[in-house]
Length: 369
View 1 (cartoon, rainbow, N blue to C red):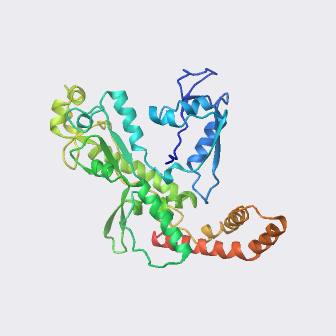
View 2 (cartoon, rainbow, N blue to C red):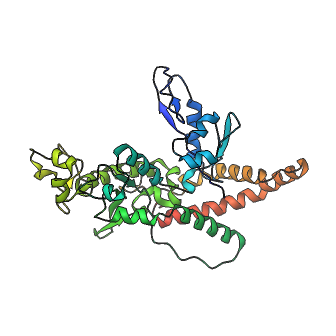
């Protein structure tokens, strides 16, 4: 059995300080450049989605890897590295674990002294919680086409593997459980207006422009990202006011909130949905209206012309050609012939197919005119 996971751990330092020297942690000083390149490589690796983006190599001293603070003792004993420096080849960790909830909970449990779930899941005793931010929590799955062609089956297999590896049903259930204080979940939501003026509430991935293409549509246009940024701010305001809350019993019995709410006018710090009490009281005047955004489409939802997307055709062809020419090691004459065939025929055919799939997806999201 093999375990495929890695964590690059950095501790920020300043003015050339060497850092605390904590085992497994690399001192990082952006100003002086200490371990800056390693941090850049690690950051790039977190976005190295296979095929679409190139895998990234990360180089570190072997003692850093052998003392990684996010691995337990048994794991560290099993992975002792002898090569120094140690170089790893990394892809996007979100392929397997898009929300490393377990690591966050381990750190919180140790720092807050609550390892027992009965304590951190109880509103009357919890002193920490995990806020799960789901940018595209998913929508109802579509029916699978029962086609046994190789490429179709390969695509379905990859999709199934990613979904299964990311599946964390118990954690999502706990986040949705109103009696569980150990985690909360916030996901995107907004309203759309039909032609007749009727408001239609949308929640989940369809509420964000970057939710198309499996969450990668944000790479296509800045307006998609701008919309989602301001929608996220709006959603968070509502969440903090109405949903990031505790019941009456916790306000009266949990030492943190009992002391925090003591001697103040607490009536204004209640949820407008269920009248529970805000964990982070909202002070001052806050504008809860939906952001007044106007995009190039003339509406508050970014809709693009196809020309804005088709301009990626050239870059897409280059990427396709690079992938084909680097699939295996070819003899020079074979590589030359393949280069000609790819340039004349293959890359254009594949690019058209990819752009066609992108067009269908953006139309489904109502992001194209």
